[in-house]
Amino acid sequence: MPILSGQMMQMPLSISSLLRHAARHAGDVEVVSRRVEGDLHRTTYVEVERRARQVAQALARLGCALGERVGTLAWNGHRHLELFYGISGSGRVCHTINPRLHAEQIAWIINHAQDRVLCFDLTFLPLVEQLAPQIPSVAHWVLMTDRGHMPASSSLESLLCYEELLAAEDGHWAWPEFDENTASGLCYTSGTTGMPKGVLYSHRSTVLHALGQVSVDAMGIGSRDVVLPVTPMFHVNAWGVPFAAPMVGAKLVFPGPRLDGASLHELMESERVTFTAGVPTVWLGLITHMKKLGLSFSTLRRTVIGGAACPPAMMRTLEDDFGLEVIHAWGMTETSPLGTLAHLKAKHASLDAEARRLLQQKQGKVIYGVDLTIVDANDQPLPWDGRTAGQLLVRGHWVVDRYLGAAKNGSDSPHVDVAGERWFPTGDVATIDADGYMQITDRSKDVIKSGGEWISSIVLENIAMAHPAVHEAAAIACHHPKWDERPLLIVVCKPGAEPSAQELLRFFDGKVAAWQVPDDVVFVDELPHTATGKLLKMALRDTYRDHRLPGV
Ligand code: ADP
Image (cartoon, rainbow, N blue to C red; front, side, top):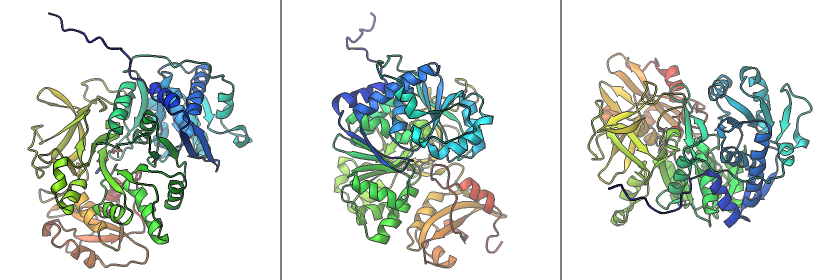
């Protein structure tokens, strides 16, 4: 007997359907952008959808074929949003490029992706002029501005003006339908642990991710929200917010290039933002600014913090001093990025406040669409007891199968076979408890291996960050003749604070086992960060690997 087919409509999942939905059902909802040109621009979903159609027409006129890559070097703003939809919605691939990477790395990425068109904000014109001779695949250069802001001259041959390109199109063009597995977006990992690798998203993975993302156990974004993505659109699509917000008709507020505490706070207040998402370093700046001036939030209620471990001290400050609900989340470029979020279950209501907090400080539990497990060095599953740490594996509808250019099942296609199932190895080390709450103990490359025992750099950093004199801290492995590696703490103090190394190390007493306490502290003015605002531990290890520890 053949299996009976369902008799429901077949509608391929498509990125354009998200914006069409917003234009039809939330057409007057605003999209507000702080632009590079210095103004605060206001538009609506109806307008964004019309202009995205014009983008699609303009790309066709430029001869950009379906499936070809269109690169963007741009801040969060309405033009970038129009490109997201105009490029992907018409069957091309939107390749968001991280402008904070080194120029050579950007050139490498553009060549690897074979971008045909490059669209960029005014900020990045000098960078693009510098890169141009090294990126021969690019046939068209589009400056994302209006005629009035175009430069008088440029070394780029036939530099195009974005607003003129759009103005030449009438918008009479219908969004095409195609297979939902068609490639839609491309994002390279930021290369914290090696050369960047391309993750090619599909329409299907992107729409399913957005559906999961808006649910209450994830970001819980709805039509009453005003959403400000601090996470850049060039890094994992601003964590999918530009797809999720139109899906529910939420107002979008884009901060443009100004991500300092004062600018963010002012924009959040003036646009009545209710929800935001960002990495911990962004919050460091915002908290410092608000504490200095005694400011508060009048509308902001919730924030998702992820991309790096959110220090418990930061979570406490945001909740207790600023009244926010903080949702700690974990994800990767390879997971679109949402993997887990630390929401509580009904049964946790009876726990005391401290126990609830400890759970919320973990990276959290998966939402439907993602699954995870931990395995030992032989890929054997480990117990979910909240204590045993192992390599974290994930699989799901929006998890990468293989990197751009890698052959399926080839040696360059990372995956692990567990009981006949294909899993992606995250490179993270984690525990999972009986309720499914995952806690990252470290990245495999950041773990400090002292005399064969593992010390979590995240645990040490979280303790240091709870000290009142510490602004930011990194724990790294330092070479030791006897133990192989010992932890070294590198600290940036708060303005005016001058704690001694002994005082900081005493602060670890009773919080970790004596052998896990760092051997020494180095004080620095600032710590290196990756292009996405995470601690660049690789650089710190290079500098301090041979730091002379006391007693050695
Ligand atoms: P890259 O790997 O180049 O830094 P990603 O942004 O994809 O770029 O980084 C994903 C990694 O970030 C994860 O594998 C994990 O190590 C780290 N990470 C993300 N969220 C968290 C979190 N909440 N806690 C700890 N680490 C996190």
